Length: 477
Image 1: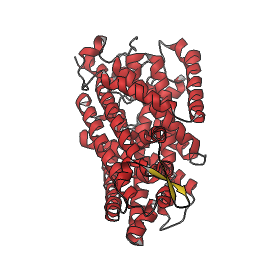
Image 2 (image 1 turned 45 degrees about the vertical axis):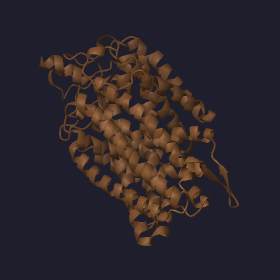
Image 3 (image 1 turned 120 degrees about the horizontal axis):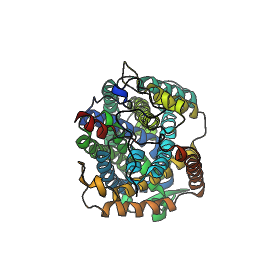
Image 4 (image 1 turned 90 degrees about the vertical axis):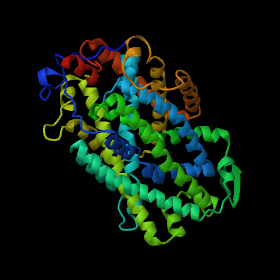
């Protein structure tokens, strides 16, 4: 594998905006958060309540009482994924996240393909989450789901233009409310448990007419892609690497804390709902707010619904913030024509945020709220699994050459963890629908053509992956 050259310190490659960087350096973000702020932001991006109330209900419909088991298996897989992200995120601390890590370790083509996979997630996930807002505002007011989702995306975009530290506190307050909602659901579900715990290990699903059928191992494997999607947000801590104090230490702590807390916030209420649902048909319908009202009263149901709506708004804000960092980083690394790079790599003076990249993520996200995203949600699950495969492969080569001696958090059980991850994730991908695999494959193929036709002939000036942490050290010396 060839190592990717990093951008020089003393000059700015063509297409990069150096107006707000000293001595012509590539534009840099402000370091303003630590582990607590990073964990709050990343937990909000994982958005456990939004995942629980917007995405998990679809899993109840296809997996029945096997939903909790599937998420638990995904959480075990995510421990290995968290190890790889922690090691690579401290070895290559860049707001580019996965593409910067993989590109630095495995070459620029691999980094470009990972960037495209992450771009699928960046553009599709926030609208998917935002489309659930109107349903949970229904106890107070009936709104059009698509218009409401678009408004949420535009609000999130406006918030994303503010200072990151301010957003950490705002999202932290919202996060408390969504954790409270999850705790209320868990308390009520366990308090009305009428189903034996054995259904968690030997899952069943509603077969209609009062009958049930067993959930097969094949269904659980197929559902792992969605379960990985439900827990996926913990990995986005690496996007904040350039805005964290001491990233080579704090990135790994943020990744691991977020996974542990987020998985618990999702899994415990899922178990409670599974045991407390009055029957399999109600569980499969996935109307969590309705179940909460049935377990308590309409007032509690309304409170939980409003907390969920706030959680969705919170998730949209943080996703726009973190996803804009990926777009910003790609422009700083000159992934696009020069004029586009200059615009998206611009950092505002007042708040220190990449305002153009924020608009570039948030405004199209508002437009996507008017598109049918059912198929695209499957594609997102495939993109997440494929991206994890690349990151695991990057972890396998992370201890070769000069990278072996760099300061970084090192995972236990290397190389067994990344090898096992690659094997399991490839198996999971093979179980996905042909349609979602074909759509993802076409997107990746088009990206490869862009690489061959535009980026590769300009490799001296374009797609030069930079790691500001490494660039600052020589400058300081």
